[in-house]
Length: 228
Image (cartoon, rainbow, N blue to C red; front, side, top):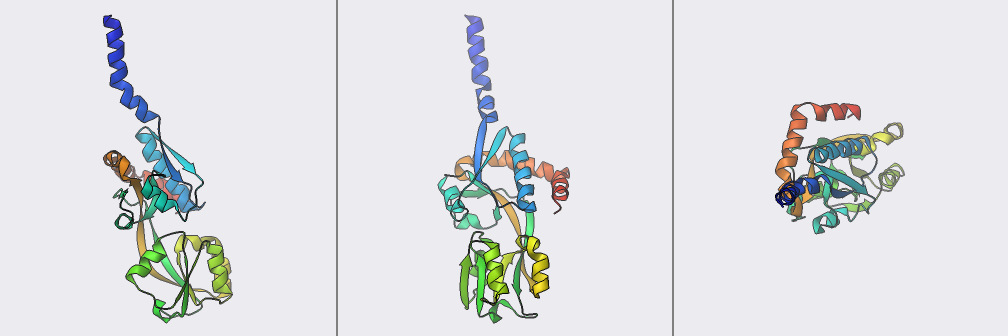
C-alpha cells in the first residue's frame, strides 16, 4: 500500500514537468528569408530550453495578427514594437531579436515622403503602416500583398515611391540598382517576440533564456550563421 501511495505521489509531483515537456505552441510560418530562418531557430531554441516545442503552420499572413490576438495562434514569432497597443491580448518579450531598416525607394535622388504623389506599401507586414500613423502621408496610398508586386509597380512607374522593410529588398537589389532606384532610410526598428496573454506565465522563463542566449553570444552566433 505504501509503495502504491509513493508511486502516486511521484506521478503527481512530476506530472507538471512531463506535461511541460510535451507542450506545443503554434505560430504561423513566416516568409522564407535569412531573417526569418534566424528567428525560427532562435525562438525554437528558447522554447526547447523550457521544455516546449514550436510548431509552424501555413496561415494567411494578412490575418495572422488577428488570429494571434484571438488565441487561434499562440502569438507571433517576430513583430515590431507597439503592436500590443492595438492587439490587446498580445504580450511582448522585452528582449529584441533583431533590427531592420524601413526604406523609402523611388527614382528621385533627394525627395522626401511628402514629395511623393503616390506611395505603395507591403500590407502583409505592419511596419510601413505603423510608420505612416506617426508620419501622415497625404498622397495616393496603395497596399499590395507581395514585395514583387510592389516593386513592379515602382519600376513600371505606376507609383512614385514604395515604403518597404529593407531586408525584403535583398533578393532584388541588383535589379533595383540597375533600374536606377534610390534608397532612403526613414526609420530603424527592433523586432520582438509576442505571446497571447494566456501564455504570459511563460514570459519570465522565456525572457531569462533569451537574455542568457544574448549574453553568451549565441544570438550573435545564429545571426552570423544566417549571414545577418
